[in-house]
Each structure stands twice: as C-alpha cells, then as structure tokens.
Image (cartoon, rainbow, N blue to C red; front, side, top):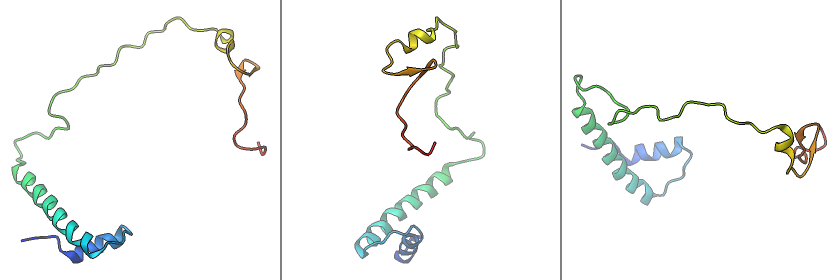
Amino acid sequence: MSEITPDLVRHLGVLARIQLSDEEVGRLTGQLDVIVDNIAKVSEVATPDVAATSHPIALQNVFRPDVVGDLLTPEQVLQNAPDAADGRFRVTAILGEEQ
C-alpha cells in the first residue's frame, strides 16, 4: 500500500514553497513512493550484527608530512607584483571609500 498520496505531495510542495502542477504531483507521487519503498527495503536488510560503515573500503590518510622547504624572501615575492607598498601587495579597493 502506498504511503505517498497526491495530497501529501501537494502539502510537501507548500512546505517547500514550490508550486506544483497536477502532472508534477502525479509524477512525484510515484517517484517518492518508489524512494520510500527502497528505503524500507534497506531498513529490512540492516541487522544489528552488521557494523555501520561510511565507506565499503577502509581508508587511510594519504597526505604527505609537512616539510619546511626553501622559502622566498619578501623581495622575491613582490618583484613581479604590479604594485606593492610597505612590503605588501597593493590592490584596488573593492568595498568603496568608506574604509
């Protein structure tokens, strides 16, 4: 027996502030019913002796360790900058003159 009715779909549309046509209500009623049925099937299969997992294959950290390397001097960083002032990049204001 279907748990999803056209009235329920219309109500969900109102809650989501989505205007649905009668055709959309009919189509969504069937689609949502299939989704609810599939969720029910998954719930039947889930048993207490099966541990919950977020991924079927165990994952491990693949990041390399942080190693400090050769750093650029402030002069090297700013040498190709179109505009610099006081050891910093100088850019045009984007928020207006109020600052």
